[in-house]
Length: 157
Image 1 (spheres, rainbow, N blue to C red):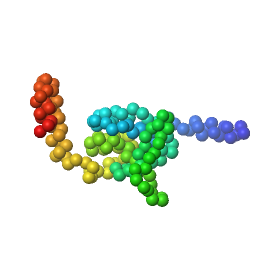
Image 2 (image 1 turned 120 degrees about the vertical axis):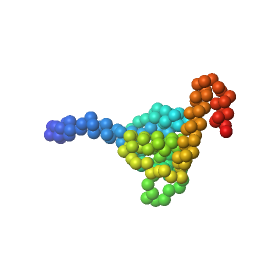
Image 3 (image 1 turned 90 degrees about the vertical axis):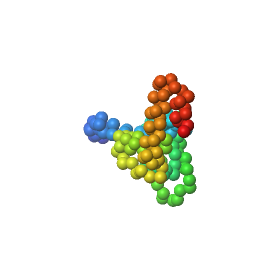
Image 4 (image 1 turned 135 degrees about the vertical axis):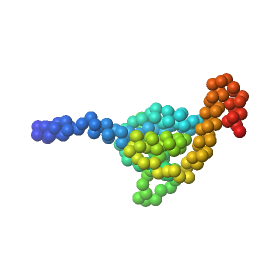
């Protein structure tokens, strides 16, 4: 018994803080928040509640998930989005669908050491994103100058 305790103590002493941090980083997941009006809200809400759920952490990422996870108190619920076949992997998207591709690439690389699968049919064309960004910048400038009506007009055209 003393030998077993001694061996267990030695083994636990070999676990470094870096190893624990890596395990947490790879397995800690944010819970999905409800629908949001903006990508900023989506990022903020989805990262406001996180935890370590060993079984739920086994799900891998896909842009074409067949399941979604949500929190219910201190529990995680996984719900299938469609029927799956026997042996099919249960996959989820780690990200909000409201995130632009540039942010998705950044989060997947930083938080999960994953490479984004896109661009694909889920991504808006780069020129459309640039145009929308320019319009938002123009509308923001008009708002700062207190030209509310012109700002709305800029966004509605």
